[in-house]
View 1 (tube, rainbow, N blue to C red):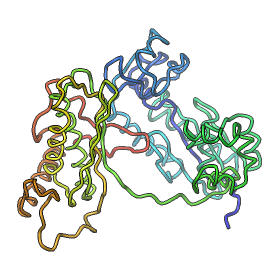
View 2: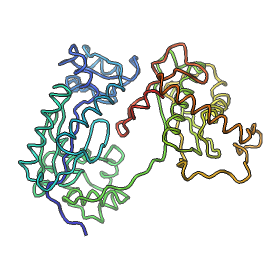
View 3: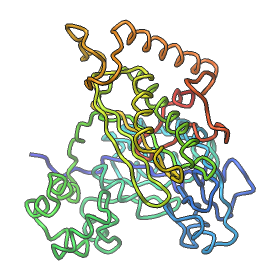
View 4: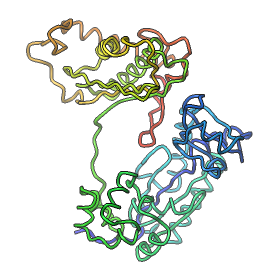
Length: 429
């Protein structure tokens, strides 16, 4: 049985991270309302907003046309994901100078476990303040963070959210319920979004006091999973082992600029996303068994198809399936405009667990498709690996299968999801 813990975790959350990096890099943006955008279009949305922009009600997900109405002086900056990853690695290196980083939780969040001699409030506070000073000296004063210190990672993350920007909060186990009940609503807890909020309200749960009144069995029933029971223990200061996770998918998505939305331009974007996913697949030494394409059109319609195949790793396999999808769905109506495209490779098998077929069966299951011989498959894989090597050495898109659209190369760079930090190698894929 687990027992309640003293202070054990420090959680660091960078404030308005993308926008703060842009303000650090460009002094002209400092103190100004800034929105970081994926494409230069009013139909796009903010993927980050500076605190000056947040004061006008602009936040992540706000449509740019709406944001400009809220703040006519808003400055929109095209996202530079390579800069954010660079600052991320520099930040982790700086934090490691003060305390070993135990977990990188996202591009702008890290967690560190406190040693026994660091667990007293004043000792933990000194570490937090030294981290803040080191980040200001070595990354710049505009890249600010909030730090929470508590008995477990969950509560430390909640503590970091209690005071922003540039906050420092220590949650002692015996004061958690009173402080959270006074300061938070249920949606402020990690993992409670709109759907979960509706579920809680159907159960008559509206406040943090209502949540603290539930026992662990009720928590599990309300959440419908073990996660509810875990939150019960987290809120009471228990430091549970983190669940073991494994990679299940590799994918990329992109909101297309208006000039790239016609199908004869959009296909090049989807090809590029597919090639990038395939290159990551090979670098991570996985094979995929399924390939999915999702297309969201400007008129609101969504096209989706999943294709299954024998374990594959070469780019040409996926490109052929993309071409077939495009011919089936995208050439029927020349008026289609593609707003967003996503590709996902899944059914992943690590190369160490992938066995060759006994009798060299065909690459595809469908009988009406061309059937490359096993030697052809090996040639396609060798070609794919050779292209990876060239692009790694000479830069992204030095060699391509096919071509890029006439609108240019800007769309093809690596993008950051907040739960996944790209490796630096990805910026050459």
